[in-house]
Length: 582
Image 1 (spheres, rainbow, N blue to C red):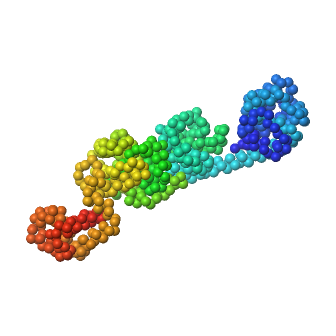
Image 2 (cartoon, rainbow, N blue to C red; image 1 turned 180 degrees about the vertical axis):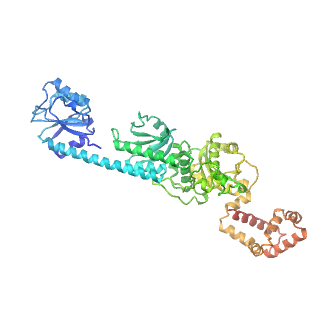
Image 3 (cartoon, helix red, strand yellow; image 1 turned 135 degrees about the horizontal axis):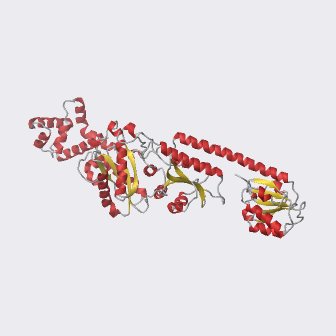
């Protein structure tokens, strides 16, 4: 906020006096709080620190001891510097060696003016700078209060609060939890890896002595409210001296906004889970560089580089998906927000982006939409990961699905890790909870290929949601032809094939609601073209069943005794089921 001694020496009114620095050059960046003209030897008793003292020396004793005492007194109270004019006062052509030596020993800037200068010009110029700086500081402080008040009212996300703190300060800002894991950050234009590499070790070395303090180049303040601290907000200050008070006000207001937002946020999930959601979404829709996703995940305590990555999806089984409007679902826990990532099938479309670049989906009240079951499932998944000792990103994907990106040390650990996770999830869920299936994608050796594993896991889960087999988890080979056709259900060529094979029969059934033939064909094909077994499965007499088969053959103009024809029809029926299962 205040001008430095160096800046004052550059003023025209000072340069007119031909200033020359005789001692304390390393302290020229000291801020000057005020300019004081003094001609008495005991002026130090009247100062508070930060003053630049102007003098002609006329009132000083010529003895070396007195001069040394005068300089030491100024340094002792924290004066910013001493400027002595030659010619008019006691010192005609130069300052005494004792004074110079004492100033050098105390690191006090000592400047001589070799030309006469009216001191009033210097004081007017410097005081104008100080007043302007104070006015600028006041305006900046007002903007800080206004900006963070608006963020509090809007219920801004932590990433937005951190971004605004970086914008207002022009400095990198990091929000961390009590375990020194990064929750949000803004580099203010710097490279993220330079800011976050070895973050935990670096952060633990920062130990300010007060709730808000300056330590090793960082301004640090504690984040929390009602006696419950949950993190720290850190701002890196590049200056050689302590940051201005404006920045202390900024980090404290930002911390208050973060604490208030956490108190009023209806979402019951922790900030760590929100960051998991942001990273998983960014990975799925390519909204952030892969290297940055890896860097942020590592700062959060989830290393993804040099790990074998497996996409896992946990979803409710089709016959047990909770009713979205269920009152029971709404009563299972407190209301919370579910700003989960978008459906993987729509993951190519980016959602709203905050100014810091984080992608997040819109929030929905779990209680209002009956999604308390999903919240319980997400909590159970997190608990299962902890119990099984696995690391990974996890987040809700849609109203019935939770996604996980497991980070394993080696590909050989894949089956063991999945089995351990499945067993832990079974133990952590209550007996009355809706049944779920676990689906896993093909492992990925790099983070760039992890999206494929997650997408495959989602597709396998969708294909297996009607499967009632009691297996720990499903993989792509487990879903066979139905799974393959489920993956292709949006393919126009598959839909054309279904229409070509079954279109005539579907049109018949649409026009004859009381004479449905599609189920008759399905029974025939699913019983291996054994007409007797199929008739029994359809609860029809054999003559009635044979008559219906004959009509189907005429409608489709197909030979139902032909193996190839029946194979095509069977594939078309399975594909039709996949297309209809949305």
